[in-house]
Image (cartoon, rainbow, N blue to C red; front, side, top):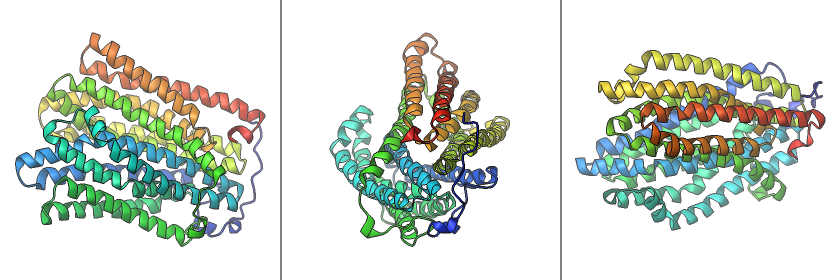
Length: 474
């Protein structure tokens, strides 16, 4: 590791337009800046989970006719893995813009900030249009691969087609949110998300209860609420909130910025998709057991996802702080950000895990009071909470490397360790020991192995940075 602190550019925030509204991530204590960034990110992720559950709840409770309600729930639920894959890819790709803009902020590079921000917004719209058109052509093959039942196929296809029409808006929102994160502002996207989520619920109820629609109404409500979010964030950026001001006359794709965004963002997006694909593989094994196990696993998942939001949010916050400080050539401050992130994430995860294990049975009974479901659900919770200890290191070191612009290395570690281990476990180990505990053991094994490789990759690049601090990600 570098032995001496690199000299940073002067903290003259006035040198960047509107920078006085932006948290100063280059000076002062790190721990409070980390909390200011990470806690809204965690809250945003948790809110998103609640609002996604609201879509299913509305069609399940308010669509007329028990048979129609079940079909509507199944149609929305059957698209969840597909949508999760898309969202993971979008969030990861947009992370490329976060890192690039953060590094430009650290260097006080106004021209670089402007080009990266406008390129990100243009990429969001153009990329979303391209993916929407392509998606419409492959809807039927995708649903066929997912083995959606015939009685659910038509509403599932309708829901997915409407959702795909909204991809330009959804991808635009992710890139706008990425710009705010690069400035150290995670509070504004949280407020906008909370408002748009409530709008989504209200529109769901309006379309289903008043207009008597079904899955099409819920899908339109989702697209409309995302459009509202994108419009609000876009308006704030056009008014010059923070150090970035969007202007229509500058809305174009800069080749250099595009290359850097894609170089960092695509591996990050693929990394998120790999996690989703491997989880689908594990779910196939769970489905081969029995209905009680499936119900217990689903109930536990709705709890464990909140603990993952903690580790993920600190990793993303680490990326922003490291990105700015790397741009300012403050390498030691980047190191302190990493270890502070691990410490805070570990403490909060430990507190959440203690709460989950102490009150897990009560929480699980909210989803299903059956004693067997609760008992099996606790088995999953114990294994997953152990696995999330490794997630603390995975997310922190991944966020750290991404802040330096190094996105490919953690993606390859996840691809090999998570995907490879879980596929091997499901198709080789699980058939020998076909129990729920066996399949759950794959989570700590795969994540523990991934943590080791990502830490190893970080140590490798640290040695390179010790010899040549800045050119590593150029």
